[in-house]
Amino acid sequence: MHPGLLIAFEGIDGTGKSTQLPLLAAHLRERGLVVVETREPTDGPYGQQIRALYRNRSQVSPERELELFLLDRRQHVAECIRPALDRGEVVLTDRYYFSTAAYQGAAGCDPAHVFACHDFAPEPDLVLLLTLPVEEGIARIRTLRGETLNDFEQREQLEKVAALFASFTHSCIVRIHAARPMEEVQASIRAAVQQLLVRKGG
Image (cartoon, rainbow, N blue to C red; front, top):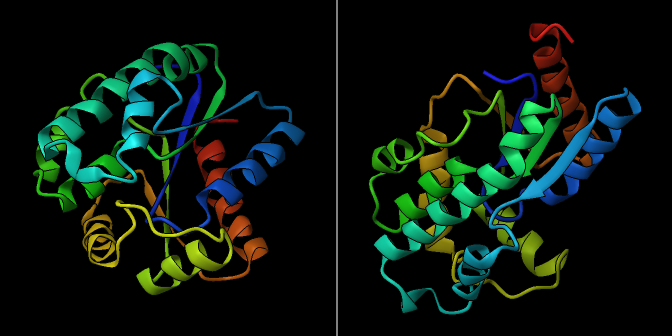
């Protein structure tokens, strides 16, 4: 147990996590809360190795890929997430172990095994799972970001990832329909977080 709050933003690529997270952070800071914004993969040594896979995912086995995510997350938890939670702060992370279960699950790993590997990681108080049709997610990557699809963003892969995200039944998950205007999505996110704050007495 810890006095802080851990909120994870999850979903396939293109759902708007990196847009919505800072908006929520600003809202919570206006309410007087101390907020830490972070993301995975991190910028640490293992996170950099993961990012190198974006252009050539086939250079490592699925087992080694999972190992890199676990190593990166262990460091992230030890150096960032757990200390902030122990200080009573609100941690907002763009991706957490639900993404690993979905993306590495789609690559052939057993999602149940992936979840079981995370006994070291604090369970989120809330997972904001942004949902969006795969076609729209891909369109956003190409048009709004002006990017080409990396090795983790290919259509067949994302279809499998979306199906796995849809299969998760953890009680901490709140699904947010992300195809709506940005302001409406943020309103739904704030409503879910408000419910969490009420439950936690803050």
